[in-house]
Image (tube, rainbow, N blue to C red):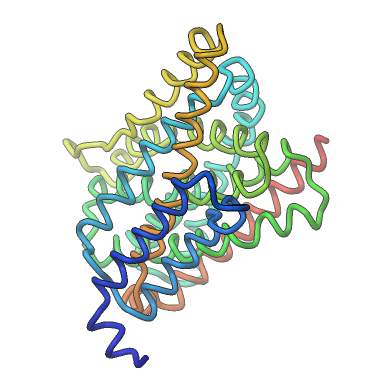
Length: 328
């Protein structure tokens, strides 16, 4: 089937893939369903679809990837214990502060001094790498009055690296013999976007997922001080800051699970059901995210933004690994 034919029928193919993924994920009777339709597999299907067929229902796809991710993260809270999660988040807090500040400084040096990139694009890539990918870029972009093209390039750069991270991080973690705790912390700090962090954590194990999710969402709260600092640096006033409110509901879900649902078997069953449904929704979310990529996005990124993104990614990944193994 030629590329032109695939593009012509992209909407139909998209609907079929979404339907098959949804049915497969919701079916508890298919053998080894978690292995057959895992987060990396769903992302890979989305990427292949986008590159071969182009974009289908772009507005719907964008809204679903955003909303379903937020609902999935909230649902994951119903499978976590508050005290254990707070302990995990506190452990990664010190390095989070250092890594956020360090990434922004290194990003400025690489983007502006070495690569001579345009200021806004370089700053957006640094922000996305430092905190939580697309969410940070979406929050900082209006503050620095970034153009649509600058936002697209930064988001495309982060997206490409996120997709790669979801595949290679679990492999590297297993090769290095990392514990669940070590991998969860590494993924939360070194992978940009929440979706890929949670996907990589889920692929590695239960404890890794819990630690990765908690540390990442704690890290995401740095969007607010970063946006405020950005408005001071760029001397902009009155710009609306996008606050990730779903993080609050994630905490509420953990509180309900810890102090209400865990008190009896029925409550535990309810929590497990919601948590399981959230994991399935997250897998479907990664298909939507993968389907957002296109050849136009790849062409728009260019070599310099990609070099900056890769260099920052390598620095933060290696420094986090060094910190984890040093403190082990």
